[in-house]
Amino acid sequence: MAEAQKKADRMRAEMETVSVAERSKDGQIAVKVNHLGNLVGLEIGHAVRDKSTLADEILRTVQAAQSKLAAAVEAGVPSIAGTETMTELVGQLQREYPEPQPQGFVEGGFEARDDGARFIADQEPPKPAAAPPQPPPRVARPPADGTDDDYFGDGDYLR
Image (cartoon, helix red, strand yellow):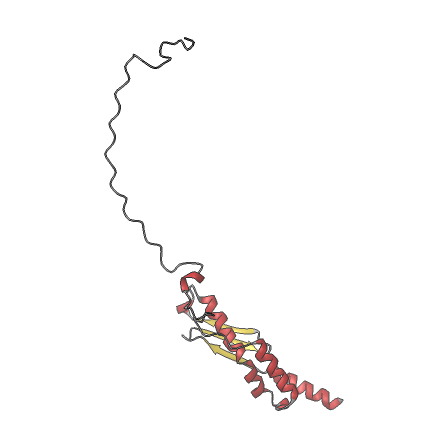
């Protein structure tokens, strides 16, 4: 029993040393995840801080790092290499942190539109065209003369 406890303690200590670092394609975002897949480090370059897709890039980079965690555990925990425990652990990590989908991939084969997923447009909407010229002002009617030939014009409505 004591040997099993020592082996478990050694495995736990080895697991805690495992981490994965990953950079975005442009190198402006660097992340680090621990053995549990939690984000423990984040560096953002100055060039992308104002980018509208910054959050998506960070999440994609974290997912890429998490997907490499199973291989890092296999390499970093030699005390259980080749055992059923290692096989189960690696399988669980692969199920929990699958490879991220390729950038721009949309199920069904259609190309993704970048502008539909943004909160803020990169460009301002086009300004409306200049208003057409105003027509000349209408000429006022001449004032009505004093005679009214309406039906009730004589003031008596009970004929």
